[in-house]
Image 1 (tube, rainbow, N blue to C red):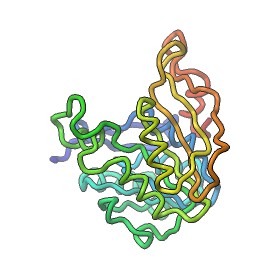
Image 2: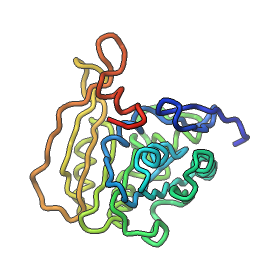
Image 3: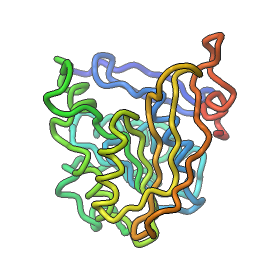
Amino acid sequence: MCEDVTTDRFLNDRIEVLQYRNGYRFSIDAALLAAFAAPGDDSRIVDLGTGCGIIPLILGYRYPGVYIVGVEIQAALAALAMRNAKINGFGDRIAIRCLDINALTIQDVAGPVELVVSNPPYRKAMSGRVNPKHQQAVARHEILTTLPDVVNAATRLLGIGGRFAVIYPAERISDLLTAMRAADIEPKQIQMVYSRMQSPARRILVSGVKGGRSGGAAVLPPLIIYAADGAYTGAVAAMLRPEGG
């Protein structure tokens, strides 16, 4: 892809984000997942399918003691994520690996790690309209990476007791929970995400523990993105501030 990037500011201008003008661009899902993940202050973290590196940037800013590896199969996006880490001064704490997650090993991420996060492709390969632009299509449809691929990579990289945090379409909740349990990641926190108060659930946030005991999942209060006037709700607005929600 030829060089054609935009420069956007995020977290009240605290971080700068380069994105391809006509490529895949991050959505609010990244901010929701970053807030939900809530890593420990000195955690080692892996972001599977990092795109432009937005989740590592958010976590790197909010948690100065963490070390993050972003993994991205698309070379152009991986290169952009590396640039974003460097221009924000995180070159020593954010590393980017351009790899297929099916070939990813603990050695590639200096693991095992305490936390894996992912905003994976959410549509099955042959379902719905596939975006004609390759970058967007790969990010949204299971073309190069499937949900089981992501969850199996997470369990390979996590130590026992490590956490996997993910955002996924609410309509595929059964697929997600089944895949997590099959990979020995027990769901422990679940939060439904709604665009507006009266709308159906749009996304689901789930956190699971590798090797965790079955049962005992906490269902958190629902997260509403937009208030009646169209502005972000207080909870979401807080997630978009530098200190997080």
